[in-house]
Amino acid sequence: MSMRLDINEFDGMTLSQVVRDAERQYLCWAINKANGNKARAASLAGMTYQTFTRKFANLDLKVTYHAD
Image (cartoon, rainbow, N blue to C red; front, side):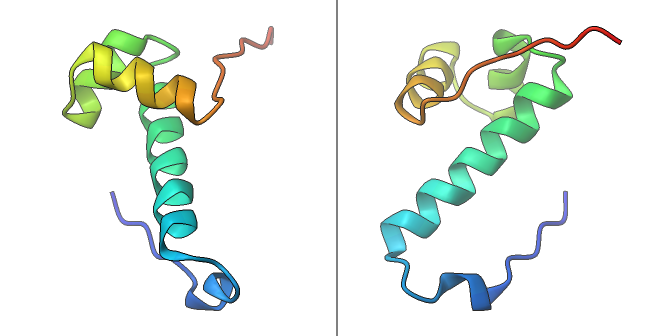
């Protein structure tokens, strides 16, 4: 996975904000790749299910499903 961050977007952000945003993007990538399956997403992200769900909740992320 190649992700390039635009350094111009860092203006006015603290390091903790940048890290939080990157973590949010990464967890969203994992949950999308796993089709909403948190156990599979945790595995893709290289962390335990418990760690994944804690981080997911701390970032106020939700899994939503859309009918085609």
